[in-house]
Amino acid sequence: MNEALSRRVERRTRQRAANRGAILDAARRIAARPGSSDLSLRAVAAEAGYAPASVYEYFRNRAELVLALAAEDLGQAARALRESGGGQGAAVRAAIDSLKASGALAAAVATLESGSVPTDAERLFNGKLIAVLTALSEAAGRAPLKTRDDQADVVLLSAAIAGLAGLARSGRLKALGFEEQELIDRLDRRFSTTL
Picture 1 (cartoon, rainbow, N blue to C red):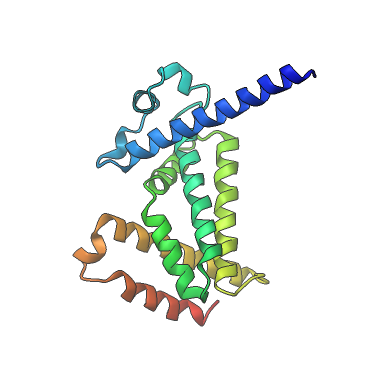
Picture 2: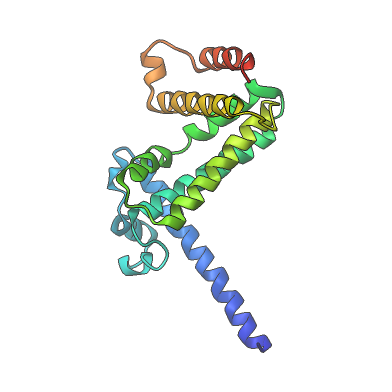
């Protein structure tokens, strides 16, 4: 390949990555709004300033877009867990803070239930989910997980964290009369004996 062609390919690759990022940013802004059920490729295209057809060059359907957003959020959660330091309690706090900021995870669960998910999008999501579970077990000082019971305990802890983050994000913890830190401390005590 000659040098000029190589530069064009590289420039086009960078532009595609920037366009995909702009589309994901637009989708994230829409998902953060109250009533984010309006997340459609057409709404995302309008928010990003693209023609609707151009969004389909990057995402085949809404399911693929939602899973891409959720995979990014899981990647951020895994990074937060790896950087948390300070044991299981700090890891739980880092995970909850990261997941509270995500508007895409609940939508991803509903999308996965629908069964209309492209295989590669589901594979990406699953990979990021495994990365979060691995980072959680490492941050809690429990890696490597040796038994099926150890793995189940990490999955249960992550489910509790996800549920707690969802309740905190929606304001339901306060409505139920709970403080976030109180439940984080309880979760830490409960799982520190099993993990």
